[in-house]
Length: 429
Image 1 (tube, rainbow, N blue to C red):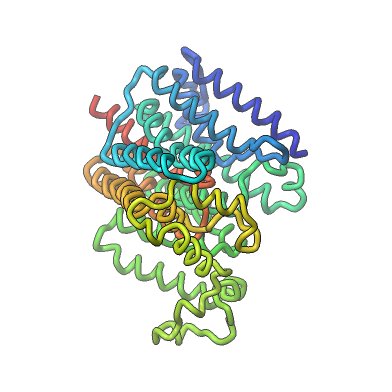
Image 2: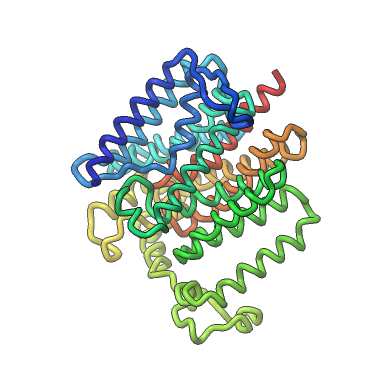
């Protein structure tokens, strides 16, 4: 069954190539199913790419099909910037991101493993290509809505495949792993919540927003639970500013209560779940030592001691951590550090981490400004979804390998941000 993924990959690649090079195409309008809308090639390609990021097409064998798919999409996006008749929009975030990529490239000059360094750069490069291509391809709200609803539809299908008995066996490797999907659902949850506030389909979008919250609880994924919580907090801060404090406080309380009252989550969160209580938490008696990190804290300390200490400013070179973990049997055979920020520190030092945090902060701040400056509904939805979901996804990077799943995770907040830039350009035009 896994071999079918080679066929799926070939089909979607050929369709993407066809769309990208088309002069004109036609799709059903997302606003009226009885109407058609005319699109150019880059618009068609963007809708396909944004809709299908959650598809991994992994397959065992010599070829790393997911890495090849990522590389092909980056090449298509790069070529598409020249094909598209509209110019990409360079914001402060894009400039900081470009500087970050330059710093990673500089890191290749002193890394012990340039090959792994290039692989790391490709994973970080994809969100920048997504921002630039989306900002060039998207000028109309119909294109934004078609791409976003397409992404949500395929995410819904992935939930069905994951939870309907035996269905998942028919599509092995088609979708990303559970952790990647759960982080993808953060963006889909926030997008549905935004549509709840800004469209007439209130009930449908509220139910979908709740539905996208459920998998991380059913799978007991602590990282995506906290990521979703942070995204929801930021959503209401965007919408109500300081008036949102009671709502944010309420969300925080619900999250804490969930940790102590949901048995599976409580058992996974603490080393000795029977000896901790919410009353101890209120008194500040629960420490880092009580948390079950699955030895992650120790792993991060060892990685920092090996690659960061003594190289605080520049790190040990792009790809150093990945080379060490892939080339040696360490930490019980783990291949990833489960913390993107620790990997940044070890590979790129304080300079690299500072540049990446500037990317995150600048993006969220820009989205907040745009949300309150523009009255156009499509722009506001893009802004609040990009800023809120990026908050949750960036938080998830603390204890998961979000960058490894760039296609399914980081590309969505940055994709909404790129579409926001394109819509602003279209409105100003």
